[in-house]
Image (cartoon, rainbow, N blue to C red):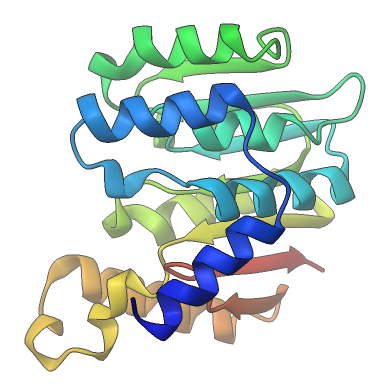
Length: 212
């Protein structure tokens, strides 16, 4: 076991455990769903839940539902009247997502929309306190710009996978479209005077931004 693996194992053992439902979603996603690496998992899920709990958003938006793990974590921190809109582009995941959301007991707080996030964002007319982006890396910057004016001053935007499995450091991956897109996104956020930001080197990298 590597040093990093030992740290993760220790961190998981000391952190509050996943709920039974989240454990089930994690297990079933790995067994039955393609690309389980897209799943948030225990530590990241707990971090998202805690961030949401600190913000207590009334309106939150997630771009990239996958199997619902992160949506459930984000919804745990919503205000009493809060609502999370979560958008998934793959219609084949709809039934499974809806079941997981229903089983969480948070169904009244989570609205799942299957479709193109870019079109969904244009239709949103509520002020967003928190946005979580975890979708096609090539459209990160487009999603960011579309959602920016809908985020309240002081609100937060979080983007996942900004270290892109360390491909941004690999010369063999420099010309890959996803790598180019993530590097461009990271640089854009760094230079964007409208936000304060932190690239948190946690798991595959979280870019945390607060709108000024």
